[in-house]
Image 1 (tube, rainbow, N blue to C red):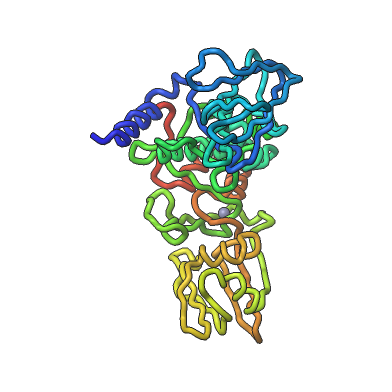
Image 2 (cartoon, rainbow, N blue to C red; image 1 turned 90 degrees about the vertical axis):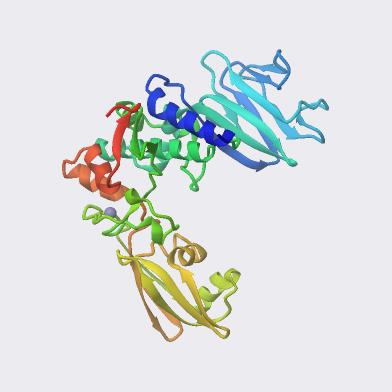
Length: 375
Ligand SMILES: [Zn+2]
């Protein structure tokens, strides 16, 4: 058996059977990518270790600040000495490490990567979720919706961990994964929702699911096949009649053909003469568009179109458009990629009395909710 596959199976097995009994299950989050330096301090005492050296290479307290930079052959800390490609920063007692003034639970690892720094926060899964929740959903929303979000975010993190085996980190701290703000991103109400669902994950075919979520679907969630490709039965379109109160339920935009041409120029498209829908998915979302320029017709996916124009301008792929005298009027519904759980819909369901399990089973059809491998 190939090594990565074996490792995958061991970790998959551990996720399903072991982590109920292992509350210190770790997630590695890239908090800085390609940084030129990292300012390390802490709320109390801490130590910095270099691989191969038993003793700490630095010991600090709440007054200490170390600037870590990439040297010619290794990492440097305020002096000429170089320490190899990795430095580990560990808190002592009840202190927390700060990186560039943001405070984190767990440990920090600084890696030299080419001539820049990659900074990773290694943190317990449940504590990682504490730093994610406030950024991804309002803690003031009904408890069952916040709990549904906690289970989705936990499943998403473990799914990424399995996918990224062998890589230095599991997830980024930005919107490309889940927005993570460390200790400063926490809220007691979302922490409560995490505690009340502790260890619970969504499972499909014995693996934690890719539990994508988005702000508002606008009536029907998207089929993943029409957004990023691939087929996952639990990420197929479902009807949602619960997000009508979302401020993002409907949107309108008006753009000139020239503005659209400029946005698409990086895709090798020049001045657009016309634009029309080529194919809609089963849910009415735009799967493909045809744009015509002087060189002919180009087919572009709805998601590529949305990303090129800007996801906050073309807020979803569930839209109609009308072209008139060189301008295009867009009328759309929802905000976000539309895949998986609709967060405003989860709020609407919670307000109607559904619990978090019912909410999750609605948006991720066919999955099981498990705790450490036991239903
Ligand atoms: Zn919805």
